Length: 553
Image (cartoon, rainbow, N blue to C red; front, side):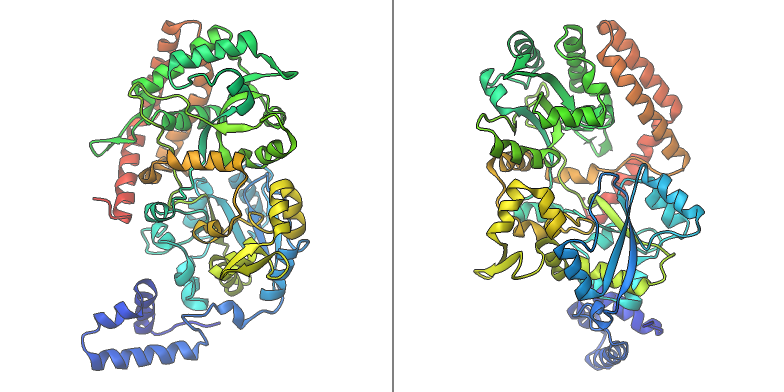
């Protein structure tokens, strides 16, 4: 085990890793003292067999098994059966045994604790309360401490400020995110990570004359036209509307983003739920229900029912993440000659007529990965994560093995034509046999992998371009302002959120506008009683903390 015992060397190491050796030398008080300290530092690093410019996984490639919990019940990939995972194991010596969540990740992790141990690696949503629970219970390692001991190369490859963004009050960082985007990165690349879109079935939308869906009046007129003339289209029974996540986010945050409702006003967090435009659109949906233009299906359909209707393109319009439908869209585009796939269009807008302001990617990323203190191989775990976070590891996992799934062309790595063809026609086989691209996304870094992606099929690129154009690049900071965990304020927000999921269907199905107003008024009273004012104070404090992290004035 390589441990830096000298406080002076450790301090110097941290300074150099975070700001670069050049900055370190500039901060030295004199050339003589600087030369002496640098020589001592170099000697210490050499004695540990650690090279600041080389990943430490190369020091030990003997076989080792690491268990990896993935908090996504839909994740169906394995390790060791496809080309990429076999290649990575042969190269690094690390074999992975996945344990996939079968329900709520925090519940499953709690069950694991009753057995006395956790998996070596843990990947769960950045928003999950279990992240704080694991850290506060001292069940996960501080990644910077492991890096100091075993692999300082982590600081070089951990992403655009990701370690700094996730640094806690104790000065340590316990998680590393995937899919993390900084505003600067989004502006320089034009790739924003935005995936919220308002989708319509292309052929049906065009047959209807491309009706206006941006105003309450146009929205209701389009639904009436659908009911009168297109309730059955090309032999299929058409469902008018569906919102991803329903009350939890499709009809709340997503709809509010389509309406470009601000997140703050005059430096204060804004209560988007009471925005007049948002309320007007909720009332529009109530009118649509009252007139029989939409039904309750979009609020009560099971996941299986939603998937079946989506697979057959039975929804006319959806508030949905384009990434959630890209695989299907690609198949529909190839298999049909009738344009029976989905395309992004302008959906509901505010009374101001502004374009949507969609959530982009953020420094929070999507999922976060941790190293459990239950692991018997912390040095191999941190070195493997460092490898996966590096450009080399990103290339290995995303592109596979050179000469088999990709080759250098004009100085750039590119997937072979056969792999591109599989990506367009059979992504299930692409993952199962080759394990490339987004099969192992746990530490995916868009600044690396996006430049290696093949050009999307036109039906997918249209949705992606639409979302990128309407992304509000600075709004990623507003993601995740709500409290999580077991604190009183987190429990208060949980009660408010649960009550909203019950109230929204009541609002949509209210018998008249007066009943709607009464239901909504009672909800506002209840949420104050639950502790909403304290939630707003928490959001404000969290926002100010985030602004300080990225130095927004």
